[in-house]
Image (tube, rainbow, N blue to C red; front, side, top):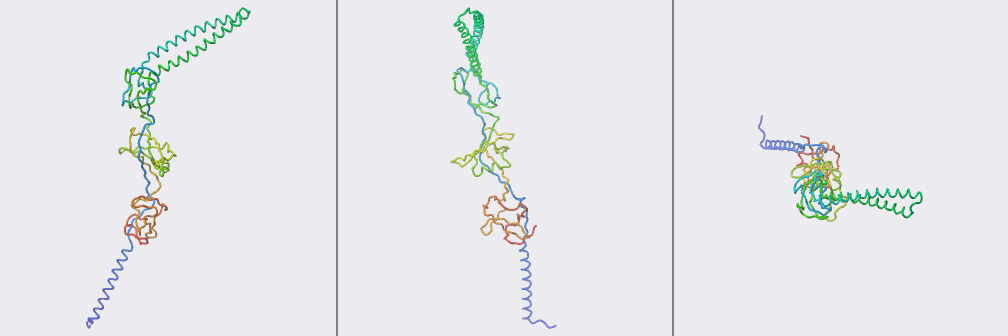
Length: 345
């Protein structure tokens, strides 16, 4: 066999090199065209929206207990910071003068009863005499009037007796509810007059949460499927009592009142009112930027399809209007472009 011409050999080697290079490029192209990705149904990735505003707890009732009568403080049974139960005696005024007034009225009532009995007998005798015309009409009328006056006096004495009993009752300051003494102004021996403050108390059982909710979020509070008050790393389930329909002019907020469902936080606690709205938001990390437009990639017929999200903002979850069974590409999105061929890992 004759050796190849050097020129022919050179051209042959060049052809082989170019052919092998094209095969290599084609293999690389095939490898880069199909991108491995992972995907999930939209319903699997949607998240709920969690909203929160500052809030604080307060008792429904904080009361200043004042004297209704004149007197001197006789005994004090509770002091600042001490707890009490509804109906407990908190403080007592000297009741001596009021008890004497009550006894005097009782004596007057007894005397009135005797005079009424006497007047009834005199009237009966007058009626007997009148049957035989042995008494003047004026005398009969006078005896009838005397009895009527005594009976009216009896009614007045009974009213005064009730008032006297009320004055005695007012010497004892009774707890209106379960609570705690916040301040005490009255000391033993102090003189008090009607309207003078004796102590400040606060109800310990009936505690509510108060929050100012921005008006644009107010409607979501009614739609929330979970609401809780968060304070000092503790979460307390609560429920909405009332949302004021009035938008405050300065803050553009609406007042919300809520109550604890079971365990309650301490009165005066500050924290956050948190509520969860199940409105299905796309997590921020699934939003990508392509050609200065935010959106997400869906998987359709082994192709990556870019779906723009006009309302999306970087770093924030976004509401999405797609069917919940739409397949969303969640992994391998970084180098994807619209229309790329993909395969599931």
